[in-house]
Image (cartoon, rainbow, N blue to C red):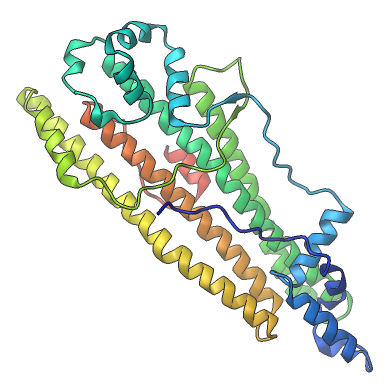
Length: 368
């Protein structure tokens, strides 16, 4: 089954939020005689997925425009690996000759990323094929980074939404004397951190887009390209390692001893990155995300049963967003590792292999 990273709506707009606005404080702050009204209103809040936070989101949506806009300018559409690969080749006029020599079937295999189905002996027959593969690999990795960076922005915005809701609730509690200014500053710091994380993520996404445009030779023609909403699904099972090794041995047999040793070293590194990155995806998909979803659902139930606070709910919303951000990074790393492994099998030599450093988009942009 594919890795499902499309987040559930964090802040559904529900009319019940209207009645929950006065309930940012505990029941003890309600004047005598109003307990019944408070109880009925809080039951209505319980029907919200995120309780009081939904009410604040409703207010923000109906009173003032959102601070961060997520519109992406319409431009050149690069929605698939094939799109970005063929666009990269168009920027290199010297690709015309090897493209014509390879034939339509082999070119399609290469453009769609199915390099293991191409006879590696063609490299000795078709001049420029190695350059074609290198151009395709670099374009593909730049595209993966750009898609992942853009996909993660949704989660950074969701984390900021939760932090802003917490900060607003804290402000209201201070206004009625239920909180100290010291406690309010603590949630303000969380909000500030979420704002800075979003700024860093937006910068990383912009840089990744610019790097992709440069890699494709489109500078001066486009400032933005249209990308898919999410990375390709990660296969649940790896290609058997024995199949990779058989292909590597077949190619090594054609190489001089010195080249064969260098080839083996690159293959070992690429294979390790491929296996490890897939294990990290499985750990994220089958363990972290499932556990995080369970914790989130239980937190909502506890909140609706008045067994946990709105702060617990908002904290868990931020935690869930971070878990998805890390999952996106793992998914991106797998596809980069898979690209490098296929490239190495065809004789390529990447400058470096994926670092598998985690979910920080800013760090990932620098690493790749």
